[in-house]
Length: 174
Image (cartoon, rainbow, N blue to C red; front, top):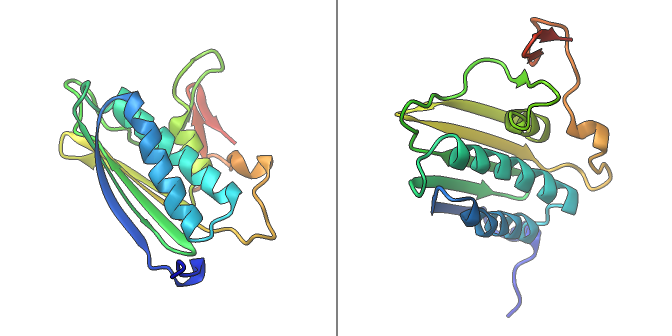
């Protein structure tokens, strides 16, 4: 008996609990990529989902958790929509990111994860969840005839004060 075609496969749902350790991320990326590929998502769409989730997980491990603490990853993947939830338990003295995404100075080695998530996901919601942070990412499958281009992978500056406007460490960018 052969597998059902991608158009008829039910939505994939999975919850994973991993330790806050960067070495635990590759299997999560593999599970998500596999679920997307099995539902017929293009290579470009799989790439953007996996990269955005990797950024959220890296933030949870490096900034939102004590070493080895549990990080929860839930995902639901359908033929045209995927949703990812990443939740960490917090870190003593840490705080959840709030407010608009801030573009870090060029020489700063960190601080671009939220920018990358905002550029790649169709919707991003980051909020405090108990002592930690919860990141919800929603992705819509792009038509096969319109692959993502490099320009689509970077946020377009908007006038200061408008929804989605970027703010730099030195002030609004627009």
